[in-house]
Length: 407
Ligand code: 7TS
Image (cartoon, rainbow, N blue to C red; front, top):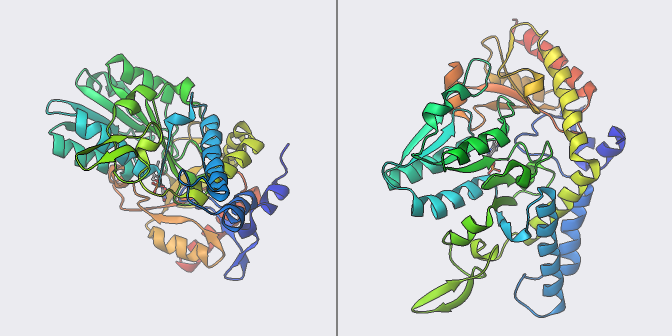
């Protein structure tokens, strides 16, 4: 059994006060806080081992390389990748989607081909496909939402056809919290010969993810949402696909041989990692996955389920509050809502005056907000270190919003 007090003590920032009140951090879908183990791993690297990787034969460079590549091995095990060669380091989930779009998409797609996405995607899994389908003449289609905030999967037969070359979808929505049936959707993509790209930016931090069980062709996620540093993201890909794809960016480290007449590429994963990488950040991400594995991802998922169930129950009693998306059994840790016609920025500002951090806006998912006919929402998003008392504070804070605005 993990102790929440002990866990909270691992996160120095959770001791902070904001506006004279203890911080209540409920913006975890935007980025998570970082435990000491991660801060320490990065500091140790800079204090004791700092050197560039894959280059020198000197001791520091060998140490830095061993730590950096060691982190790749741990991250590969965390998602059960068959090989660490299939774990490509990127800056974030966004860059990982762009890597697939530009390397695989630009080379493969042609007029008549289709890419299928969903109406609940983050902009990171919409805009790259708009750019690439425009350039290749392929068509971009989407699965619409229903009023519960679920995908209208009854339309899949119509939308997913032999013309579909890629089905790119989010495992867990950052606004609605909806958890999609990833394994089933991957199988449906494969049944028409399409590849499946899973946006795991909100699933990998919050629940057990096994790429072999999901059988996905690509999975993208961001280190900073799972206790790791900013600047660390991952693309997992099926080996034959990654082998066949051309490099995304050119430069040092991604080559085997460079002649002025032409060059040959390095092997996986380095073919996709041009230039000096974010060494300290990936060492930090290695420490983050060790930390999460230590807690147990089943426990993380269960803990967040309890928090979200309680939060939805209590928020449901706030007058004028409307939660977007499905009930607690079909969602993860994000709860977006509206409160009468109060602007979400006003809600967030009043809560901030009590030390409560939530996000207000469209959360980089404008098509979801268009579907609901609103331009923005307020969003509380939880992680395992949040507490039931913090949910009480959120609800009290919303009472203050009522009082201040005379609702
Ligand atoms: N996909 C999903 C589902 C996300 O939630 C996000 C970030 C991304 C992709 C992009 O991640 P990045 O690290 O490349 O930026 N989501 C959010 C959010 O909900 N609030 O801030 C960022």
